[in-house]
Image (cartoon, rainbow, N blue to C red; front, side, top):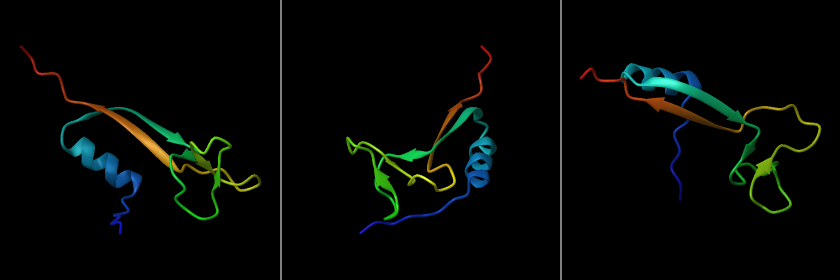
Length: 73
């Protein structure tokens, strides 16, 4: 059994920024580290899953780097 909570990208970024964290980057990936949906295809080595050829590209996974604000000494 799994539990999932879908949160839009804007909601995630706003929540992080709202805590005072500085957003350094956001990277989107057209591959995902697991077979999330049945229409995805596994890479030959099984390491990642991607959309089938011919489907429009869309981000399947993202990473965000944040940093705490610098504290003056």
